[in-house]
Length: 490
Image (cartoon, rainbow, N blue to C red; front, side, top):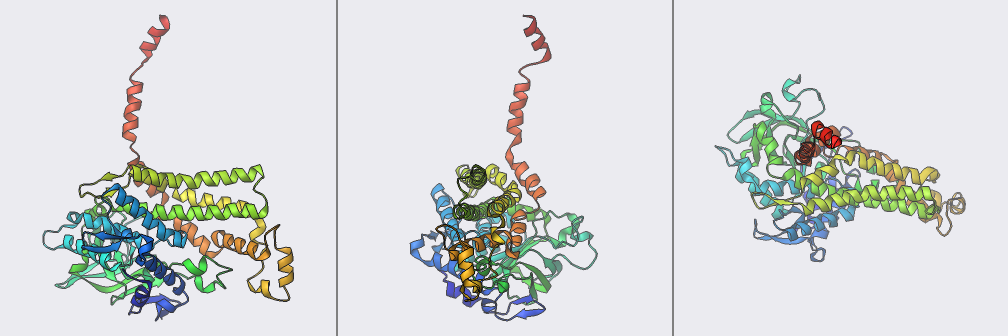
């Protein structure tokens, strides 16, 4: 099994990570990426430890692999897989949204359905199967960029002015496809092994050049990552910014300057229909988002614990209005966990023998994610009040002979010393008020796409209205105006 040291050593390559107008030469040690890379390394060490119970025998490679990359075929395997995903999520408290198990889960479903990728002339199905085997064998950290750049949301790439703003095929060679353009939003790509590139947005017949699916190493020649402003370097200490300092995973725009994609790296070649099929005919979208909701549930529980402890420290937990807020918070968070359990309980076996979570429960909770997360944050805001603003400027204020005595005396609570109170409220601020916090609210609101798409395309279509409307029609047909008149006359 891959270790954290092996993972960190793998980052020492020729990747082109662009930040502040420069190329980052050493990702593993750069202030913008070092802390979160260390966190990912810790995940690998956890999985490599037999005591974590995160390993299993993978039949695809006839050897050991990480359970988070498995394709569950029995109820027991599905439970073990969820336990493994949760084990990783608990280590980061849910704050690393695109850990290696996310995209790895999509490929677990892809690997069980290679027929979706079949091509009359090239072995794309074999490419997918072999790539999944690599993930199992090497514990690859694969990021993805599956959304077009926001040049225009009114049209698709074929209608945009300019030459290949969205990544597309410029030409075909004997060696593979030459691609040019960009794609978003590659969360984690700067510290990943490889990037999976495709498009989940529906494309039309005129967009055929952009209908591709492939994976490349991050250090591929001609591939660049333009990163957003990192927050970790501005974290003065892990005491003042406990989340920012550890879990600030990078988001990047992926840019391709006429990059060669070898044929053995191609999964779909200029086929808009197959782009949709890879996600939905394989069960990858459901299985991948089940992982995502497991991670989200862990994160919400962590935020809930912070809110509860805040009321204990403030001595407000017995106030009826506060208890009502805590009850509302508990109901909101437990609804996510309940949906996860329901999705697991209603899982169905697909044609390849893979268990796919129940889509009604899964897409039901996904449809509310853009409302659930802001609601949880708003309740925490309400419970902390002005306490997060009445904090010293930093950890040095607590140890300075000039400010230390005043901090210790005035910023405290009954039975809670100043240092512990400030630590808790600093954590709360990193959840609701810092740039890191703002990024996470935006991230969770649009995790699976625009809310109207999630609700309209996924929640609505997978609810199963037909059954209930049929029952309603049967009830409506059981009486009429004439029967009511006859009943009244009798």
